[in-house]
Image (tube, helix red, strand yellow):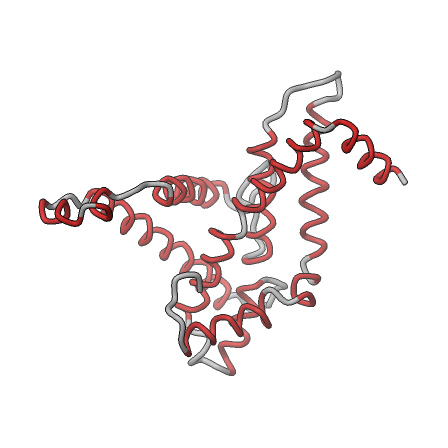
Length: 218
């Protein structure tokens, strides 16, 4: 969706996103997941500070929070924390995400000086292709798993697969995998960083923090 050229295909993706994924009614269906994950986060924080004040890595915790929320909405699985669905699958997912984040922040010298591409400097491209292949394999595995499951669950994949039966030309596996990719890449790190900065600003402005605490107490 984020890289498709403007045209019929892009408008189709935008329609699917606005109606079937990001609509208020669809997001409200996952309210229980968000509440549960926030409750788990607060439980971990309170457990760490039972004996007094304790240092915690909020950046990592908020990142895990957003990834678990998105993955439970998409596939009904948790990949971070104690209660994970499959430890080996969770490990592979975390490793792949680390590679994906590393690739997204890497610049290719050939993009600035195209002549460098003539010398066969393809290390970055090879790495990106390898990560893309692993990501595609994982997303295809999730899609196939939901297709073969007899009972349907309240997940994005199940919903899109149900639409695929009536409109196979619109809701292809490739479209479904692309939409999941958008949610993972664009909806996780951005959210956790925003929460982190909000907390940092509250800590740097104690009078605002006090006001927020009073509002929560009320």
